[in-house]
Every structure is written in C-alpha cells, then in structure tokens.
Image: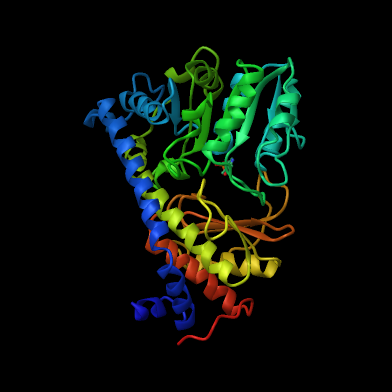
Length: 428
Ligand SMILES: *Cc1c(COP(=O)(O)O)cnc(C)c1O
C-alpha cells in the first residue's frame, strides 16, 4: 500500500500522518455508513413504490411530450422528499438556475422575500439584485430583506418574526454555509425556523437552498415544513453520474409556478425533453446515498487532519455534519493555491494541470477551483475552491469514493508540505 501511495507522489511522512488520523475515525465512519444505509433504503423504496420500469430509461427529444422516464423520476423525487410534486430536469442548467426559477416563479412585483440565514450564496446576489444584475428580481419590483444569523450561527427567531410583514411572500434558508465561515444549519434548526415563520403567517412560502445537504441526514427540510427544497444534480443527488441538472421539490403550487418559469407560462412541465439523461439521473440518484457518504468521510478526514496541524476548520473534527462541505482557514493566498494544486494532482482527470485564481461569472472575487472531474464543475466529485479574500478559506467537498477522497486530501497536504507551508511530525 505504501508503495502505491509513494508511486502517486505521497511522501512517507504524509501517509503516516494521514493513516494515524484515519485510525481514529472508525466510529464516525460507521455512523456515516448507517445514514447511507437508511437513505439508500429510502431511495429504493421510492423507486419501487413509483413502479420505475425499464421503459423509464428511454428518452425523448424535441418538445419531450409524454416523457415517461422524466415524469416518473419527478414522482420518485417527490416520494423521497415527501412532497406533492417535483421538477427534475437537464434543462435546469445548475443550482443557481434552479433557485432562480423557484424565486421568479413564485414571486410577483410588490412582493418581498427575506433571507433568514444571512447573506445568500454569491451567485444569488445578482439573481435577487443585492448586487446589480440585469433582469434581477429587484428590477421586477421584488424587494429583499435579510435577517442575519446570530453570532453563534443559530437563527435569530425574534428578529425573523419581527421582519415578516404584509408584503412578505417568501422566506429563503440556505442550509449549507456556501462561501461563508458559519455553521451549516441542521434540519432540526431549519424545522424550528420554519415553525417560527409559519406561526406568524402560515401562508409565507418557506424555501430551502438544499445544495450539498441532500442525504447527509435521514430527514430533509421538506420533512419539517419547507414548501420548496432546491438543489443541483451535479452535487449530492446526482450521485456523480448526472451530467447536468437541477431539482425543485415541493408543494404542487410552488413547483408548478416554478415550471412556468423553467419553460414559459402555459407550457410549464409538459415541455422539455430528457435528451438521453434518464439513465444517468436514475442511477445517480440510486448511487447518491453512498457517494454522499464517501464525500462526508473525506470531509471528516480533512477536518481532523488539518485540525491536528493547527488550522481552524469548520465543522471541527468532532461535530455532527449537515452538509458535505469542509472549510479550512489557511490564512494566506499561497496556502489556498498550494492546497488546491494538491487536490488537482490527486484527481483522475486533468491531474497534470495547475489551477490558478481567476474571475468567475456570478462571483465577486477571483476564485480558485481545483477539480479533475468527469463532469465539468461537478462538486460531488473531489473538488476544492476558495474565493481569494480574507481570511483565505478553502472549501473542500466531494469524493465519489472514499479512497479517492483520501488520496486527494493526502495530496493537498503533500502540496502544502512541498511549498513549505506545513511541518509534519517525523515519520517513525
Ligand atoms: C452550489 C451552490 C449554489 C449554486 O449552485 P450552482 O450549481 O453552482 O449554480 C447555491 N447555493 C449553495 C449553497 C451552493 O452550494
């Protein structure tokens, strides 16, 4: 084994340090595997109760009328998320697009939306109009308010209740931390916040940006009152096999409203070919629970490894997980770059290229992204990225298999060591 690692460029002291950390994680990994087992049963149960058949793996082109596989897959998603309906499409280009459709479909001029978990993900700023964006919700007369999380990362329940007014149509909660250094919200916390909102006005739509959270816990936000959960298929629920796509699961009304934005008024979900992706969407969903577990193991491993080396990590090595993201405060641009170069070196694709920080559409600061992925930009695959700004955090996620996640993390450490940015204890 050691020879295999050394042939890939991992030094003996890096491996020894990593193996020592791994040795302490058996119990954590067992818990992660039990959650994956639970969610795997949930997915298979949904596929069985919806009578998924071989015919569902076929496809349509053009208008996509009567696409059996597409419609059945949406039933399966609704069964998994325990919602009335779902929209799961390759025509939804990414997570931001799915969120934009959900917002534009359900908000009208004069309405107000409130983000109750602080500033939303960077790419949503232009959708909402927090930063000027052409065609933003702000341009259409939808106003925005924000209630920040408390310093300990929990919801400001009295602040949220006070913010809800007669114009409030929708509140949004981002489950994952995104590019913030805050705690990811648990489904339990989300339940409390939704209950608090509904106690003020039960007709306020509660939407959850579920990116990176799917299948990490046994319950989803839609199990605790969310009217809509929204995410990307090149993250957890695509299981690494979906080549593109996004989903919205929720009440029939919310999902239908979104569908009239995805295509256009009158056409909604009736139109939209599956273009050959049905097998990948089904099989990816089938794989998603264990793929998410592999990514979680990688995140827990990275947290423990870098914590031992004295870096601030969020979540820390011990705490429970509510998404697959691991943030590590590296403190300098050089360290962020070295870390990302290491992740890239550990990848199956493009391992020989070196990532550099650059401007990205939708992001305010230059971002460095390491990803040697089979699907471009897929972040359920081993990937790391960081906006080039203080305090120089790197956000690490993914890993289709645990051994590949482990290799990538060891390689990040190797790269940091080579750049003289970490000192490892002597190997025995
Ligand atoms: C990834 C992500 C998005 C946006 O998804 P894209 O697919 O990159 O457009 C939105 N919110 C959160 C929390 C995310 O992690």
